[in-house]
Every structure is written in structure tokens, then in C-alpha cells.
Amino acid sequence: MRLDPDRKLVITRTHPELEFLGACAVLMALGFVAMWTSSSGYAIRKDLGASYFAFKQAKILAFGLGVFVVAYLVPLDFLRSKSGLLAILSLAFLLTPFIPGLGVELNGGRRWIRMGFFNFQPSEIWKIASVFYAAHVLDKRRDAIRKSAVEAIFPFIVVCAGVGIIFLQDDFSTSILAFLAPLAVFWL
Image 1 (cartoon, rainbow, N blue to C red):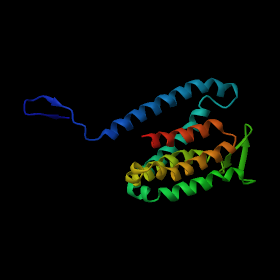
Image 2: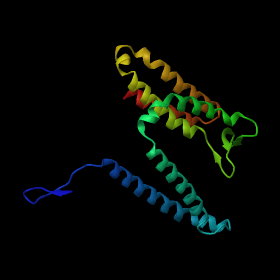
Image 3: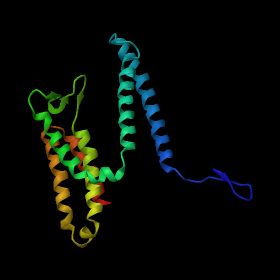
Image 4: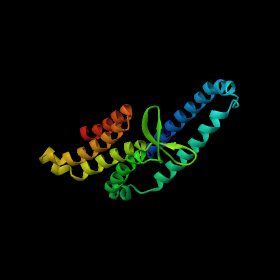
């Protein structure tokens, strides 16, 4: 905000990402409070203490914020230069639930891997990597794709390969999300 020569208050938009981060922080806080209030009764019934799930969620939230800070500090040009490698590594990571001893079967699907004190779903990394990969490749080949849509087939096949692996893990809903998000990038 600043004052113009006529002494009127003028709002300038120099950092729109701060507005986005503020909205994320408000949603995060509201979600945390809602989770805490709704889970405290259940935790008491299970003799875990009223704040058991809140503390568990707070640890995950702190980890997520740490990952966010690290991701924020990595330059975008560096990430763009490594988008192909990131896609290949995340595709390989999608196969880890099929490795005996590492993969964990829960709710009829083998989509989790044991990471010490918690289980992790590799498809979560794939969802981000596939969108990033599709956006980078389509931007890099923009002129060639305008001449012929055939140029977009290889990145589409890479995305579909990841979606197929997720589908083989008996995770239909995640496979749909992992397909729709990069598909939106292709459409845009």
C-alpha cells in the first residue's frame, strides 16, 4: 500500500504469492482445528488422550512445512532442467510397493511402502512430478506441438505409464487424479 499525490490510499500488488500463502495458511489452520475438535472424542473413547490425533497431525504438518520451505528455496530453472529425471525416478518409485518386504498391502491394495515409523504412498510424488514434467515438456516443445500434436504423444505416454502403474496397485481414485491433473496441463 502507498499514498498517491492526492493523499489517497492505493493498494499495489507486488507479491501475489503472499496472498496465496495466506489463504493456504488460513485453510491449513481451519482444517487443523476442525480435525482436532472432531477427533478428540474418538481419541478419548480409544483411551489415547484428547489431543492424540492433533499431535500426530501436527508432526505431519511440521514435516510438510519443512518440505515446502525446501521446495521454495530450490530455483525453478534447476527443477525444470531436472524434470525428465524427476519423472523417471518417480516412475521407478511407483514400482516400489511391488517389492516384497518394502511394499505394504492395506485395504486390498498394494500401494504403500514402509518408511520406518510411517507408511508412504509413492503415487503422491508421481502426481506432482507428472504435472511438472508435462508442463515443462509441453512448454519446451510449444512451437513443435503447434505444428503437429504428435509431438505431445511421448509425454502423454509417460503420464499414462505412471497412471497404469497406480491402477495396478488397486488404487482407482488416485489413478484418476493422477491422470486428470496432467490432462489439465495438456488441455491448457
